Length: 473
Ligand code: BG6
View 1 (cartoon, protein in one colour):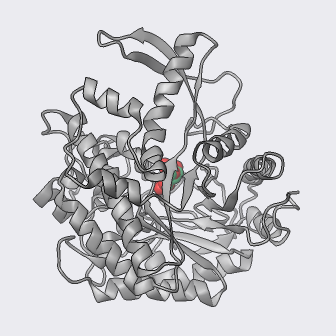
View 2 (cartoon, rainbow, N blue to C red):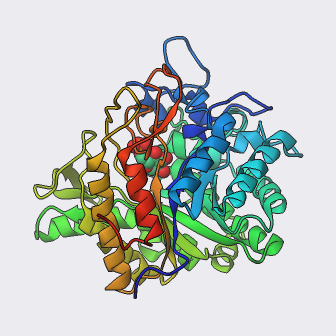
View 3 (cartoon, protein in one colour):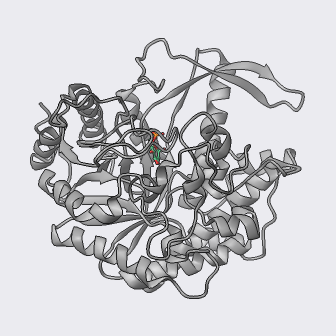
């Protein structure tokens, strides 16, 4: 069995990493706008350092980014030239509800995305919308303290209702939250949570997680009511964790970390909290407050498909058990793998393993919505990049993906590479960590013409799509 004939090949971006125009047409301020490039970014996105306003010492890349807000027609035309069947992009919450708690949406914001969707459809490209990709209105951070406040569930319902109503009939695929499990590592970026003032940061985090899970289920319900043809997916940052050795302690440690991540998808796909997580939350006194009816909402509104990002794997080594009987561990280098300049281990075979694990666990169609190589590209004077390393990375991964489908029978809807056009890195805020088939002339501090040029991989991906993955040379 080859890839399905209507396999959705394409690319994926996120609003704050490509749009720029952060204060145009009524857009409000968001957490992502306030995450600067440089050494403080990590502390800010992880909710340890407060950055609630711009200052003069930092450079904030999302303000301008690659200005796709004004250049989306040119960019979508390039995607169409590569033969994209699907374009995954996200909606900036603060374009639709600038503060987050208004009663009426901002027409200019809805119109912008409607035009963008129409532009995709004009080229025969299916839009795939991420409703929230690491963005959260700053007004809701100030007034409500982020997703830990239950009120945000209602406000999110307003957002999704405005989106589904406006785009009904034009958009079939939606994801509720990008990489929902990233809240564990980056709570300010993932959920507008500043944890510096929290008495019990973990408790606040699990409360926020519960709210996001209920909001995601309600979004699924609302989507199906408004547009029965809409398909709603969850989205996992799938970084499989290996045990360092066959020592049972290492194996146990790897299982626990993997469970921490799978937990979100267990709830969104199966409709209930898995027992391992309930027990753990009880033991640690971290059980979130739940309202009557929450568990029914989760159970009755599971997702239609499962999407995930895949870049890398990690390896964990046990360091023993703590006084509460919980395993402790450290992340160690995998001696069998090469790594990128940013330390991400390159592991194509685990892509096949991941596809199989997710299909086997959930038995719902899968969608790979991110995969790619972030590296420094050296462009020549014409903006051309000979990026064979990117072609090699993608080829190796696509081969494994095909094996998962053709040899193992995984049900896969599509594949979108991350950042088909160079954009701002979510993790570091750098521009020089590039993923694109299209080079953008801009540096880490906003210098450059923003000119777009094709890299070598542009024509390669075009050929891959045209042959439905058969020609990978
Ligand atoms: C995923 C995110 O974590 O990985 C994207 O959904 C992000 O937003 C991508 O850009 C790559 O990570 P980074 O840190 O290299 O941009």
